[in-house]
Image (cartoon, rainbow, N blue to C red; front, side, top):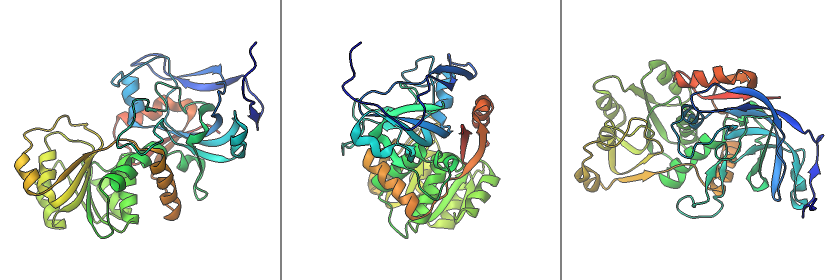
Length: 349
């Protein structure tokens, strides 16, 4: 046997087997299985997962509606736990530390967009829905001390997407007026909390009056139900227009966002659940000097800044419900019902 050119440093017992939530194929329920604990390669760390959280990409992968599908797969991009082992002496300081994981892999530089080598933890590589997961040690960050593992697990993917959208792209300033569409999802709620912490005045939309009320309880000024025929006029009257709009829907309703934008506004979109833009007027965009900005995920610098922002402002993520990992199928079913307000979390420890 060829000797490995690195030494593995263990904090816990080296377990050969672990329990994992395995997706065998598309449109199949999750299965709890005993699988081999992943082996470390140079530069990697083994994290004992205490909590993990769902993202919509997990649902789309289960439905077979995502690029680069492969099965079987252990999903999960978000995770919080304790470092069990590392494969390099320079990373020994992580052993035994409580951490959260940056799921944005191979985006370590300041390139304006993700490089070709970019990938997201949980596909194509196995992710956090297991007792242990392997990640590059460079993707480990100290868990914010004011949060438990279940709260911290809610942060990574959604928090990073929100931070890049709001600060790197929209460059939000204190005192500006912000509109967030589709409040209730993980990213939208982080945008809400981040914008309020920055000193912005925030409005929201939702198809649920209850979600609007809950957003107001978190600090939003007001909201409008997009099922109302004149929701855009209601928002314009209440706000006077928006400096920053953060959207995840696109589709036909995007035209109304252009109308709600103040001259010089920035509109950032990180999703397109309602489909392509339709009949979008270029005249309105160039005459109002609007910036339309696409965004997804973020780089390692932004992840570090996001975690520091959470700590500075003592932000507590909105967690909708915590499930035991053995109940993962019911957990993702709740996400498919689109009734959640905040992140859906799995408890492992």
